Image (cartoon, rainbow, N blue to C red; front, side, top):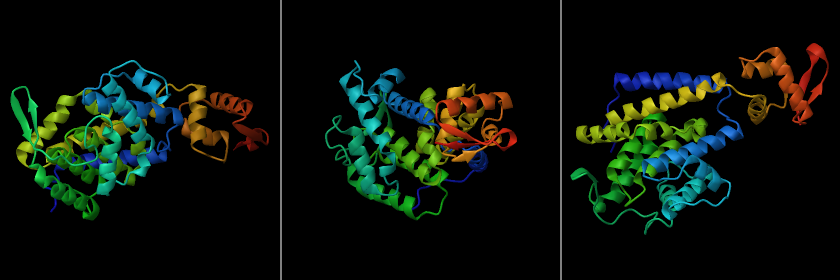
Length: 317
């Protein structure tokens, strides 16, 4: 059974905007961020996703844990971060259309935090805000069937990934299949579904935008609950994704230093190139700055220089 939602004019506009930006991402070779940018984005994603769930560790503390350093903080918060680091280090091992892989990811994410990690809940649950029950999840007996149906939709529907990922995220939150960890699993699984089509989502920390204004996230979920379909949540999430890609495209407008430029260019794995090729990536630098960068790259033995003047080319070592 296909989960209920409508394709509105707002959704169509956002899909068009995202598609255009994805073309720009590919044209600017931003789909392969530098190792430094990847690390920063991983830290932001982990920090934001766990902050939404009440984790108190800072980005600096998460960086320290990523570098195998000791951190003083609540034991639960430290375990949550260590589990998330493991998840994001082997992101490509999980299969987004496979229910067993979904359960394995929950086990990895919640190990040491709850009993029966990696298993669907065996009791009824509701989400309470203040003195009010915000959401009463379906009976636990229905969870295996509902999740199986949701994965069937993922596998068999010819809907585009941008929409499928939002639908899965919302429906999973509605079903609330686990006693704990549902929010971070919903956001993680949306990332994995999108990565299948657009690898850039491995490095796109859209959760940072959610954590900056969590009320909008919860309101989109609540509005969809009230309407009985995921349309409002799809509109909300596509907007978040659109803004996240816009921020990534601001990469070329950032003030990068020589080291940043060389590190990024090296990550593109170009084996042979000219100064013009280098300037095509960094459009705002002068030819003199490009020459200085490349000279530094030769001194650092990143490249070797072949030929003279207009016939000069550089080869990656």
